[in-house]
Length: 151
Image (cartoon, rainbow, N blue to C red):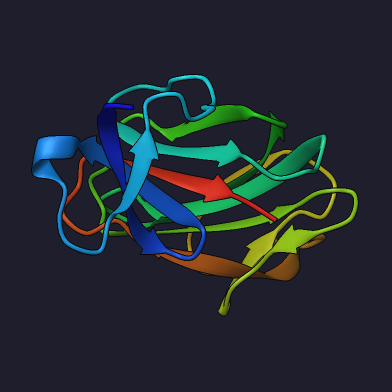
């Protein structure tokens, strides 16, 4: 079976697909018949729900060039992706995600509203918001990056 892409494992929960001829040592072969989730834009940062959760809710943070923006909740159905950023111009991005029976967390403490959709910049946690443990993603020098939420 011919190989079209390789999955370059960047973190335990992330995978960057690169053309086979550009793959590096330590890549995982990805057969051409491997199931995939819908395509997203070729630029920016996307998060895909490849877990057993029927849907997950994601809060995220990124630097917009002048301040850190925190936003959420983006709902992502199982086997679907959501384009979080259309332009990836920062090396580090952060996310916190949860479903009905699991969650994806890290060590970066950031504010998010526990129930309402939100978006804010700055360093002060607004009234009614709570602290969540966001996971850091190092996107390196890439202009396109996908984070996969897996069990």
